[in-house]
Length: 113
Length: 107
Image (tube, rainbow over all chains, first blue to last red; front, side, top):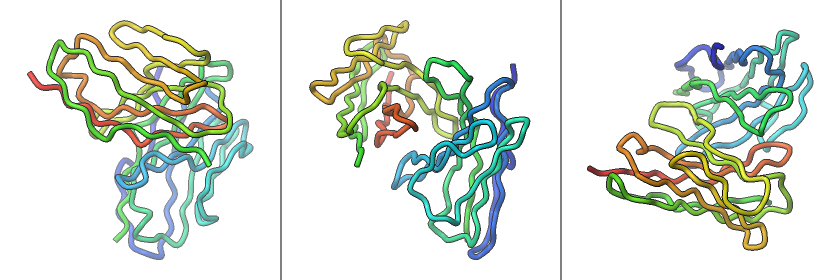
């Protein structure tokens, strides 16, 4: 079974631009969660989608948004980028009846200049 | 709020045993998870404790005490490949991660 894939792997943007990141979960997984990882703040939960609906949301500004498609693929969007948005963005998928394990993708490294 | 504290760094030698502690302040959660992340890699699941006590998975064991708001990951027979960052995380309606512990294993 293929793992979680994320595209692109690396991205460089400038302040004020917007960006869209993509995540394809493991086949059969319907839950997709997004995390931001930075050296200063660690791993922080952004949001979770399940069956095309946002199920949970972390404490991030409205510039961060996401969606999930009928095939469980998910995208997250960050508008009006700030320097502080530079981070590794990880997505993770989970099976419908799992043992609480989340399967992480390799991440997208976003650099905002 | 919910917070999980871990030591920032731990060092050990090959073959040794190391314990990584996790203390938390949270109002309620389903269980405590542990993840490993190598530099440049994705976090990978190691273990989950839903109940108090010890869970053993090969060289790794994890412990949870809800009354003490405390858990730990025990790594035995350390190998060089165990050098990585380790995160505890509480499972609520989302995963809340600890601050992370960087483990360095020396020959």
